[in-house]
Image 1 (cartoon, rainbow, N blue to C red):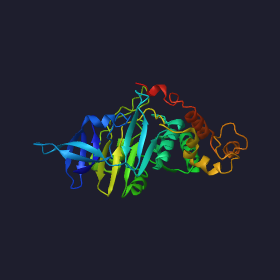
Image 2 (image 1 turned 90 degrees about the horizontal axis):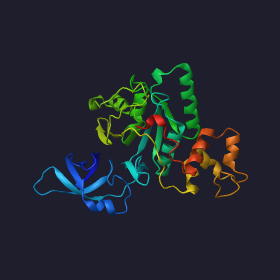
Image 3 (image 1 turned 60 degrees about the vertical axis):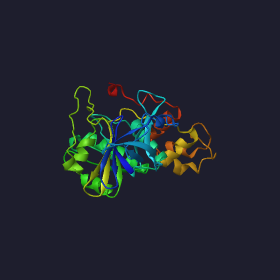
Image 4 (image 1 turned 45 degrees about the horizontal axis):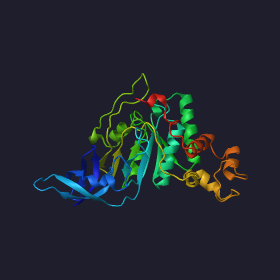
Length: 314
């Protein structure tokens, strides 16, 4: 039988077949040794083939993963050598960003965007909680949105709680499988509830002491929505480690660098110390944001620890 993985709870996978029936499936040990370094060999969104277990109507054993169109992957926080596939076969990702409660740093945003670019997944930035900001904070949101629009990304200011611009997000989801990501407490579950109130996902208040969210989603899970769309809710991500990228390709995943690259003197320019580098010129002339270039340098240097803020450590 064939189906799509809708939820993973560590050892069990909820698989939905084409006729709409769910099976609880597990995997056989050999999956773990087929060169998959990921902590989760099967991910939400995977199309899998499975055998129904003898004598058990609702359980099965996954025997094959159909080749993925794409996936969003990051370094596991605890096991730096291993990776974690957050979701696969995704049409687009929405990254929820909040200025404070909790703060989302540009280094985190940029690492996320680089990964989406690397796997050719459309990323949309959602600046949430705009109903709670002061005039100064709204100006900062506007500045960030302009910065990322300049880099080629769509940015939408929303209030999941008040329903502002939720319809715009909904329109973008029709006919697609979308993933929602962001730090804990940025409003992922609140947004999904605003899009599809019948789901009634659990949400939690921000911890005032640390201005970070409580984890309410432990495992990624996909939901069918009533308007021909699927959404993948993901656990809050603390850090985002970029996985297995050659230094030569990283610049190509910054769209505004890629546009200028053809004007660099050297075709293999890494935009570091090379003469007549169009990206460095663009930086000096204000075409490229310093925060984006700083993120680029960090990824090039392989600095994985610096982007995790102390307050996100448990």
